[in-house]
Image (cartoon, rainbow, N blue to C red):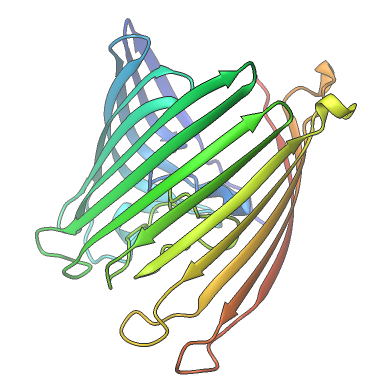
Length: 304
């Protein structure tokens, strides 16, 4: 076991500007907590967010160091990426959200001599009735090497689409993602924002396309407040032969969640997660690997 101080920061709000400096959690595309295995990454840097109005905010920041999930200290951003240089990473973004479920997000990243990245996400919710809606979403990633190209010469894209529906105590979703290039998406500082990224696999390999179907049931209306269950299944397809050859993958997830309704236990969340992954060998043969994982997570959020 190990222990370390992951977050310590100062924040200041001046009218419409919020400033934060220190070591803190970041939740952005490709730069985030990566806490799918329960221990979050944190970062060292500074950021400022300007709120134009109740629907629109813009911001920017710089990150110098990162503490990985199993690390006891902070390393430079480029060391974590395996790059032979020490540079800061710069980010800027905008989020426009006129109503719940409807939004447009734009995000850019600049890593000198490594790459420039751009991510766009949009969604539109159509309310059909009380507690009943359908929501359409899309996402796009562009990454391109720059300068001295410390990680090689690359130019890659990612596309995603999703439809989600909800009615009373249940909801469902279908999603599709595509990574059409023969090179890989770079994400040394966080997990993939792709709609088909789930418990074990991200389904973001070169030339990989994937489909997801999922559903959630909330048992509160059935006399079990705070209990819900989520099921997801993803089918991933990649070339069987050639430069981008890798095993086709399927993955199934079950997530059982309990958030006690009692006020004395507010902030406590228990999760029991199951994941199964299956692979089909490529034309080379013998490169398939099946996995199974079980995770029990206890989260408790409280204010000091």
